[in-house]
Length: 294
Image 1 (cartoon, helix red, strand yellow):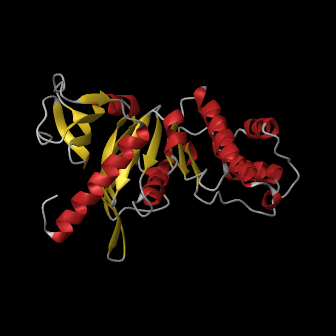
Image 2 (cartoon, one colour; image 1 turned 30 degrees about the vertical axis):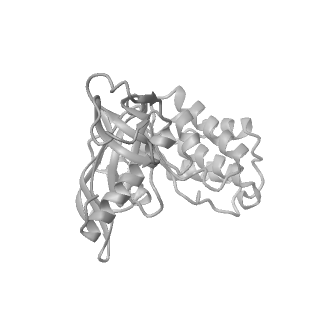
Image 3 (cartoon, one colour; image 1 turned 180 degrees about the horizontal axis):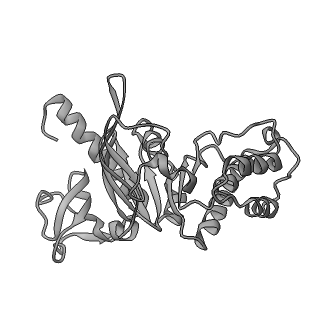
């Protein structure tokens, strides 16, 4: 299995604070991977390390087995604030991109995409809508014909229609290519419709990673009696639990064999899965800090 991104004991420190620490992950080539986690979890730092904008203070990160800085011609990157020259038109950005990226720049692809999306070529991008600016940034990244495309919260500030149009454009662009995508976002509903791989980052460490369909299949919500919720046949781990006086609701990772028939099973959504693991990690870290059992 070829790996597009691989991190081993990766860490980045700002002063005395670790923005990313002991990070270990693998993103298989050809995947559309979602990178999720709360603000301050280290998502942007991880992407900046993967694109070569930062150098690690510990461990290493590899892009297709090589140092990220040597892979710049083959990596597309859209930063969180979609940085563009506000006084330049979309057409001028495409021209400038060709002068800066001589490896395999596809100006025709960028022009065709922006024309199809109705983005005017002669208007300064500072006067375009937020959705149109995001589309210009995406078109420029795709014009590199990248093997790896890194997107840092590209749709966070867009309205629902612009978000949908951006995600549709992204999915259409990578469907006919072999581009691997690593997309950071808070918007789990959008990710569930488009991503097939998941990385959950919390407190600068990876808490969960794997193929989305496999993770959803291995987790269930169980509803059953309050008594006996500590040990249940067919359950490997209780990730998150809530209780009433007589009933318990558990999000669990399934183990081998059938689940105790006293419990009713329900499928989980990606949002259920992510929020449960984030909450579990937060409780575990806080318990360690306070010196009490989790």
